[in-house]
Image (tube, rainbow, N blue to C red; front, side, top):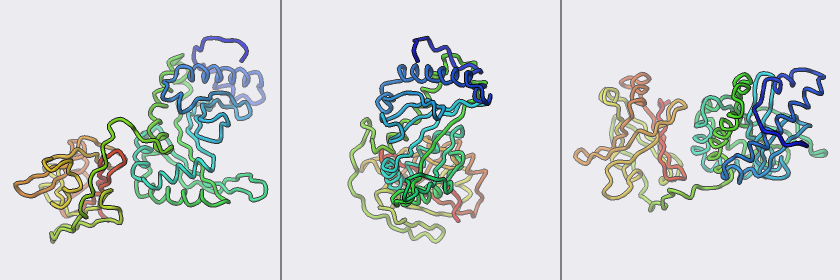
Length: 358
């Protein structure tokens, strides 16, 4: 752009231009407005986001504007903005093979955290993991299939584990690449009435993406990080005849799986008893009696639950928040079996997935 001008928003003519075939002047006007938007946005972004995406610009060939981690835009993470007649799409994309190899290796190593950060974005976001084939001679890519393409809340944890493992394997092969796309669409009507406030709205969405970007870049939070706990003894299998507790093939320090039958008191009071041996996994210290945990169920994360140690009865109890309790009552009956998948995330948070046992 040759002249500086204040950004006043993205009006409807910006979006309508891309629906007018052959209207070159309209498209050029729209691209100029998008470039003004991205330059103004980049200048106003918090330093935390500018540090991740120091480059901003316009691609007339692709009719999009972008924030990029590298000067060579497609060689690393990029944030793309597409204006269409009915929407403005914000897309986080990684299409570089080396970057994907690193990101997917990290995600495969900690699938629970990857799943958490993706699905926690909420129902406005979609996730696409594509499989492309690379021509051995030309190096050109062609679409082969979508490994996953759906709303993020529809991605269950088991599917995520399998999906990330397959993608990590494929990107290690010469003829395959598995680009990642995470996107959200805003209504063009909604954006057009915001005026310059659209800058604040988009900034908040970019801030929500930062934890996922940091995770897939191998960056760990420096604040509130707790020292790695001492190695605890391997979990034992309780001898209850009505409950089944098993340790998965995960390291006992990282997680275990517990299955038990539902008792009437569990449904009425909103708790699930575990085995006494499990407290070694949750204990913060020798004197601790409670541990806050995050419960994940049907795409929802609840951080108001806790694990209690009741010394008088030598009982370890997962106490459900009111919200989880209501869901538990509505979806389980006496005699059903509930499965708890307990995992320690890399920030020392403990996450418990509650589901029916198959």
